[in-house]
Image (cartoon, rainbow over all chains, first blue to last red; front, side, top):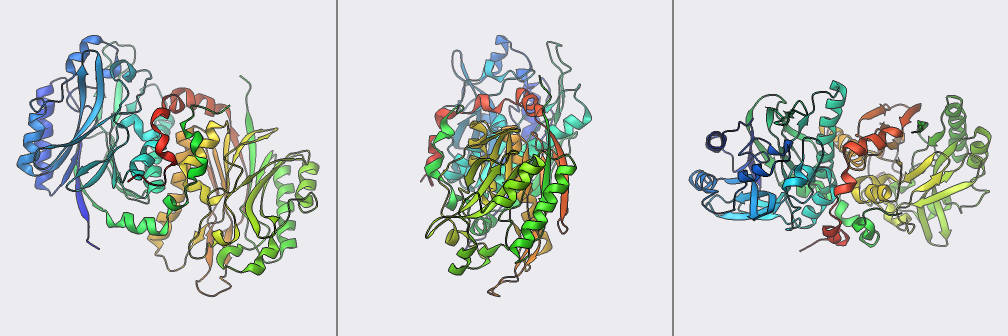
Length: 296
Length: 296
């Protein structure tokens, strides 16, 4: 069997309101990670701007972009120049009044390998995403690339075992989550740590249940709430890579930027699934009610 | 809102080939845990005997019992005498040549509250369960009791997010897993710890994804392989209770027996689900393929 190891670069950064500068820093990070041997580079969610969903403001739809070659040119160019596969995350304008939270995979030759539109949309204080984003309509389809089938999902999707499972059943070899998640300042330290640990745990659980690695990239740093209703969001960093038994291969710091290359051995998934053949024993005859909202 | 705290007793023990003695030790443990305030007491999987699935031997079907009042009398009596709800796990003989791995809830008045027949049946070296047990046919239905709706599952089920989710969608307030899992002696220490941590993690993940506590009770001690093909199983203990954010409330030792009462606050589930309303955003329109074996 061919040895299949891939080197994944993660870009954990903070953001400013200067989109040009944010992009420039990402391009530099991609060049750096590529120089360190990264073949796949994963960005945080909505990395071009501040996390604008802290308030509901129609004017912020100006931040959305059509998915044209021109709008993605910076990323297309660097992918081709460096010969790396890149995951980018954008506020997509599909038409007037119809927007998505969309992740895109750019091949190492600069072509668009595929898109994923965030399927599960959150809405809670400081994360008013239902105002901005229509739920995705592309389903849970992995994106075929030169380095494997990428099970690309986005942030809130990470709490849903169904999303991870459907990606695995569709042949995904990696689960990838660009993310923007953080703390509310009035929560106690205990509560903050419980939240962060729950977030890591549920995603490591997807790795275990499906026997595939997970790559999660979050932003770091504090962003103020323009409405002053909350104390803003302290994004908790802690980007991580887990193997197919949920074992942590790398964890980034909470409160600092981090550029890191992590090696993943895709052959381990094959081996882990031989010993733990969970897919073999699924009771597909008894899962029909998973399409119910609730059963009562 | 009424404060709903329940005290759960867990019985982590080793087993001998002496069924009468195993039962007697369990009855004593139930009396002890009841004296410590336990209202719900959970046993390990197939607690009456050695873990007989290490070999495929038709004679071992002698260990199976019909689910009659008489065969369960010891447990029914102690439940009524102590006024506690008890989860027992038995090798059920349904008819000639048809057996199940079945968990039963006995109410505090000694009535049978309900049964669950293990839905996911494993089969790997030293765990030849497909030889003994037909897959369950009762589905994923919580069992209504005086202390709440119990989402009772068994061992191998713990690797399946679908099982946990269906229990939650059916109104379960707790997930409960009687278990028999351990190590093969030739695995490295690293591998052993990865396996055990994966096992804890995936179940804590079910707690997080569904916002409900998890109670898992395993056996401890070494049991020899009667066929001498392996070095037997070192059951890894490590029974645990996790809250609705996956936070560990208690973890038993790996290599010692343990009787413990753990308090669970069921109101926390209500609160956690208000802040993390995952059930609200499930994409039930896009989950249909979960009933596929694989999609290709």
